Image (cartoon, rainbow, N blue to C red):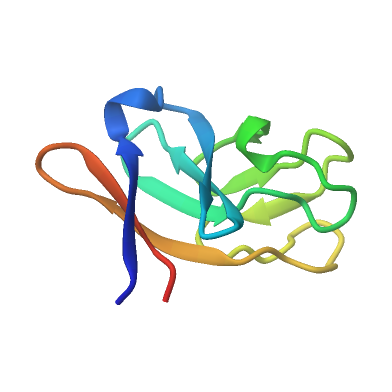
Length: 103
């Protein structure tokens, strides 16, 4: 596994996301209201929308530029059936450190 520490869970309010630059790739980490984490590519493939700034719920993220929706677990585009984004395994350890698996 190629896990990279990106920050602390305390730095992401529940219901929001943050973008992190990891090895030249922008990855958005989302903290859901139940404190679980999800991670996707941070840039929408259609118009370059910043997914870390998007609206989220427990299942989807909505691109702020054109309302395309992506499944937070798989990265699949839901509404329009176009290109999805990559989903990453993500976790927080006991100290709150968030790691993303780039593998």
